[in-house]
Image (cartoon, rainbow, N blue to C red; front, top):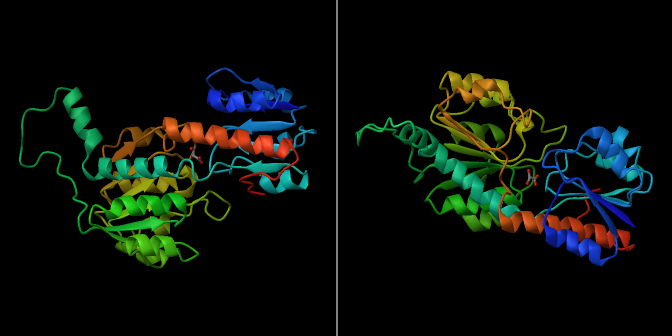
Length: 317
Ligand code: DGY
């Protein structure tokens, strides 16, 4: 059986696949595989391990006649047409759980970086502009007694809430479903979307990207944010109308925003680079040794299960 991996992942995962005597092909360059090459490589693969940088749309899925599984090395799978894959009898899997803690850690870091203006301070020191302690130098926002709004009460939203609660904050959340876990662990209160946006001091976005959540935070909804609000996004850039958010940030209608993801990733809107009230990270929510190894291993195990005729561990279609 042939397995193609679209980028180098943890050796441990590759070893697992080789132990199964699969013929493993890997795109070795440290950049997304060009579409033409991808089509060539996946044509006769029985299993594919892909990253979120590869777009498995109808056109690409039509090219993969043997394939039984596309194992995405990410919890998000908006890069794959899962419905069409199912029509073609291709199982799609993702990598939940293994990256929850890493992403929640990074979300808290991003909140603190915004609240305490850490990158601004760093830039000041590096540019040798720090001239000594000043009573009003880089005044930020304390977290104690602030209300944190969790938008999307899934695994990462919940773990973020648990962490940020320890800063003596109050948690509110918006989701279609009630989350017993979130409520039990953080005394969180489920509120309407409008209440979350207008009452929270800090808003953390944890929604999956679907056709319903594209520009979920649009102009009208962004207008509801408090002037003192901090908005952070570690899920998918397309959930926020970035142009509208930039307008708000330029007019200082909120305190700041933290981005780990962008609407046109990896392109960064040049306007963002000129703003001081933003913290910009390069999509590193799951970038820890632990999470990335876990993600690669889970993807490999999904491939092993499916190619041996067993049920996938974390199928999404
Ligand atoms: C995911 O898993 O969806 C992240 O965005 C990448 O770790």
